[in-house]
Length: 551
Image (cartoon, rainbow, N blue to C red):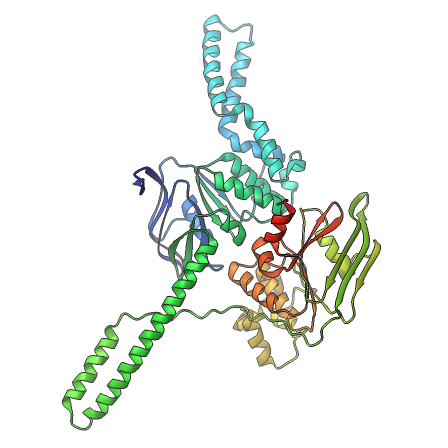
């Protein structure tokens, strides 16, 4: 699979899907999907949830077979596949030993060397056996050196440091949280250095400094990288090609995510114009048909023939599809009463978990209509600050003062409900005043259609729970929103809807997020929490990044 590039050089074709269909029973996931990945490409697969992004990874990795069509990979190319859910392992390996599995080929060489060392140290071995063992040992030693065997431990230490898991190296892998396991699996995958790297949501659980390191790693990676990610900022900084999935088809765009969005907008605009022009033409032709039929009724055979010809032309016309209307979440916040100008005042705030000091004399103020993102490394205490403001933590020193007429709406990082055994409908009716018909139409606006409203909350996905919680929030007359990682579990389209709604929100906003694209769209101020203190930057994430010189 070798191609000639435009400059006359040789380009290796790593992966190719040819007219692939994939069906799950009667459900059609892919229908004639085609694309190519060349060696060194950095590709993002984008599309709504359920369109088949992860299925494409399964096809490339050989986990699934296509219903029809071909999936071709470069001969002898190695594949690394990071899944969203980290696997459990049977052996009780430490994290360090788990990462050593990335070097299984080197471990095999090392085991053979140890066996030969036992032979060579045996005083009873014959001279001929000793000579053979020494010769084999020398060859293995050269191979061990060539494959970087002496750098294994330093590579593991370095990777663990880059991904902030050094303190986990001696922990039992199976004892880790789901998020920690995912990062450990990412580290293992990167250490393997495969020819084709498949990363499904690799930015989950990473803080902003670590995201910056991963971006640099991927940009300099010599192999092919195919990403599924809702982190648009990450995609802008890593990929040079976009595979967009819709209606089972895949269309290729060249450039990063923002360039794809621009190209798609131009396409939709052109399609809308073409559709309107064609519909006008069809309407004019149908009016002519109507007139000719009327004339034909008055004994004009020629008029009948003209009408028939025009009808045939309409039938044979290559119709331009109407751009699909979006069925997005109708998210908007009602606000009947505003707060005072001073919304939140924090003075000399000090808080500690035992001997672990989180806040030390921290000061911060939020004014009416401020939209503030609280930013900082994992473990610095961002969620703790939100809990203090909400009154969930009270064992602190200093002052936390809410202004007059402040009404808080809160979205936690892990959304849960008081009773998850009840249905969506019963839960939502607690917060909604209106007819049952209106309840159904409002839930439908949040993509809970028909009988779906009778699903038990315990059966919902993380994204569905976030949608339901937002549906409840917008019914309340809140003027101060506190959001902890609000884009978790939301696909790109629904993140954009949330951005638009928050930009229209006329109250005050305090939120924690690692989604730098989202921060750029929403925040008018960034407050960094570091070493127990707040530092304020009057701008979005890009302004903060430029002036803080941190991430």
